Image (cartoon, rainbow, N blue to C red; front, side, top):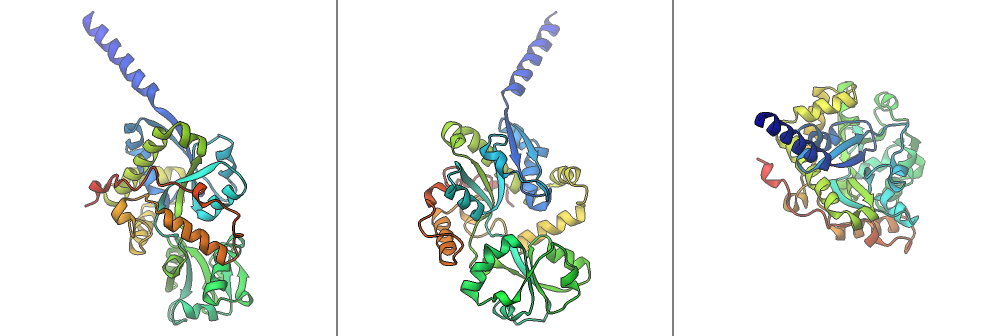
Length: 329
């Protein structure tokens, strides 16, 4: 009788703990990949659960736009590409705010065939540069305003390497953990230029949430950010097999070799755990840098002066606490 009573009591306590976990829906902006590794790691190895969170990762993709779901309350946190979309939300009166930034550098790159150009400044002389429509209205405007690139070179980017591989003089945009690796796999030797190394100082892989969640449930926001940060340290420096398995389950196009290549590329190029993150921890935000990027965007003509209250774009309230740094070898 006592054993049955204790077993029943244990079941009740376990059920109580399970029911106490806060449900969180986190949406990414693209298909699962190594650049999302820390989040999948935190989900797969139980880190989110240990922080009292029941997290669902809702994957983005080429036909999916998760951004409207945040303001509508359908998701709780959103991974975004860079600060421009967050600035645009504030400019349009959408009550969302950036609460963490997992990439110290924006992984946006230009790639060129090896030995075709004499460095970053010489790329402006390329006869053809493939840039996406989004890029044309963002970093390309900065490149023309600050670095001498010319609209005469501009060609539309179709998100494949075919044109680039067939033309040694062609330059194209890419993502640090994608196009350079795919080009190498196709037999092309390339040189990779990370725009952040030449002044494109936006944060990337930022996390947005609604301002009402920050105001009314700050503990929930803090736990999600802390757990995600721990997930990133474990993914980068620990056994990331659980995270990789979760990524491959969500996106079967991924392989262990591809994911290992992405992680190595992030480390080599200093995309994550570099700069201010070395001092304040992965996820860190420097509000002066947010303001500096706003000023860059104004000077490049990307946004209008006075159109955005920078204080509403991001907050450092939940980061810069050195969470998880003890997990790094």
